Length: 193
Image (cartoon, rainbow, N blue to C red; front, side):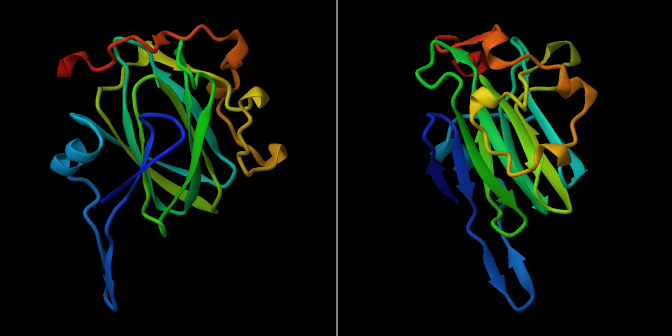
């Protein structure tokens, strides 16, 4: 796999080595050993999958401490715009984002570490989205910032009148009104000390 660094430290795009012929293709979608050699030590404990139609926007979500989660995300059918926003107080990139197109064609994956809010928008007719998490879901730790916050400068590539959001996601605060539970000096991975 090839690891592509982004403009924000810790956020990386992963491109697998795809072997294709007349029969189709094969690739290793995850290797614990290679991930830890090239990205960071990790222990994924939960896999999730969602199916959404065009215009669905999910996010920008996070799990508050002590239930923080890193995610390794990919789109196995269709195409999404995937986004991570730095919400670590004191970070030189606080409020900045990285956006990457993930699709069934490019097989890319995006690693979103703890301390970032994450979301995506479906750009194809339908999309099946999968992600690994390094901590179990804890509903009491659910948090988010508004996916429609214009101050974030995210081009979601979907007209506003076509966007489909949950009631929960419509209620998240704007970044300017948000009190982040994360800071740049927190040890977000205490289990690996």
